[in-house]
Length: 332
Ligand SMILES: [Zn+2]
Ligand SMILES: [Zn+2]
Ligand SMILES: [Zn+2]
Image 1 (tube, rainbow, N blue to C red):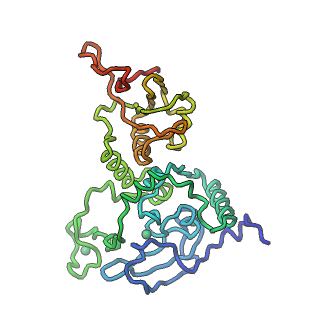
Image 2: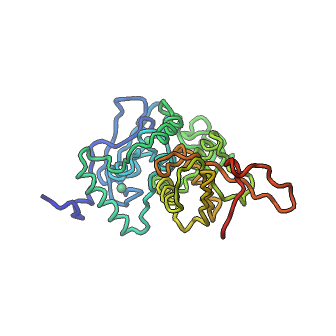
């Protein structure tokens, strides 16, 4: 039997049919595709792969696969739009809701090694794909279902916007194959494919996660000096137990990113003080997506901390013993 790690074998990626989401495929079930073996370099692993091209339907632009079959299987994404196949959502949203780690190899050598390892794992797994899926996170899955579209979104297959039209210079008028429209805000259209694949720095995902957290009462406080989250309804616990739970739910958090964890036994709560506001926000969004955090077998509620009352101002009237006190105790 040939070794799975044989570099020559691994370099060959030939497939008969691409892994595509319903939207990219288009409404016609008999869509004709052209297939070009080793037609391009995969945008993720840089290996040559089989490129498919097709027209997804009237008024659509020709689409093609951008990443190889293996890379698509590894993340469970479409080979063309790189969105999650189950929910049609960005990887960053899916991974935040399911508490999954975004593994992004840094160097090219690491990347090759990473892909080969995963290919070997896939060959060993009984269904050939799902080694990356973990125990279902029920709250996270519900959240994803809520965000997912129920129907394919064919508008996404429209031609790109005409860059000449935007500059007021297109002379082709009705003959122009591109869309004559003024693009909406730039931020969301500027997406890096590699980041989207690995689920990081994805502006679309950030927006979705932020809006979802806000809709559940987890709006980040205006005061940017607030970097504290509050876990409420904890059982008897320890600092290290809280820290491990947090890192398990938010794998992007490193223990060194935390300024302090203060447990208030009497109120069954803990204050998690982050060094960076951005990380506190990301954690708040991920925890909100996952419906709270389980510590010591009990699901705790997550809230944003409040600003510490300024000296000289009216003291807070909340009662410490009741557990409603969210003034922040910082040890730095
Ligand atoms: Zn690839
Ligand atoms: Zn797609
Ligand atoms: Zn034009």
